[in-house]
Length: 165
Image 1 (cartoon, helix red, strand yellow):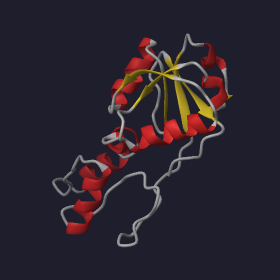
Image 2 (cartoon, one colour; image 1 turned 180 degrees about the vertical axis):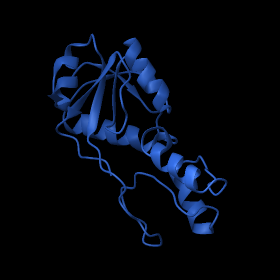
Image 3 (cartoon, rainbow, N blue to C red; image 1 turned 90 degrees about the horizontal axis):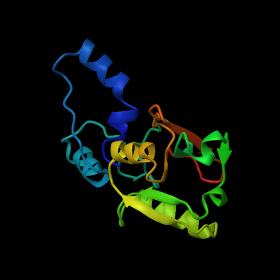
Image 4 (cartoon, one colour; image 1 turned 120 degrees about the vertical axis):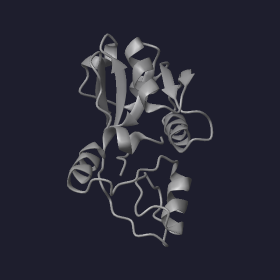
C-alpha cells in the first residue's frame, strides 16, 4: 500500500541523501497510479512501487525482491513454523486491504485457487494498522517480506506464493 516503501525499504537511502545533499530531496506520498503520473509529467524524478507489468514508457529498475510472509501473533499456532503453505490458513481470520486494492485481489485469487476457505477479520489499507491488528490477535496478515515484525509478531514465509519485486 501507499507508504510501504517509505516505511520499510527507503529509510537508509533517504537518510543518506539528506545527509549528503540537504534540501535537495522532496518526498511525495501517493498511490501507484499517482506515482507513475508524477514521473511521466516530471513532477517526480523517480517512484517506487510494485508493478505487475512494467510500463513501456518508463525506465523500470528492480530495487528489491521479497517473499510473501504470514504475520501472526507469537501466541498463534503457526508462529512456531518456519514456513507455511496457503492450505495452512484454512478457516483463519485474515486482515486484508479493502476491496478494489491490488493486494486484496491477489490474495483472494490465490486463496480461491488453492481452495482455502477464510474469513475477513478486518479490512485496512494501512500497513502499520495491519501489523498492529496482527499483534493484538485480531487475525493473520499476508504481507511483503520487507515488513519487519515488531515484538509479539512473527513473520513466517509462505512457500506457495510468488515473490514481490
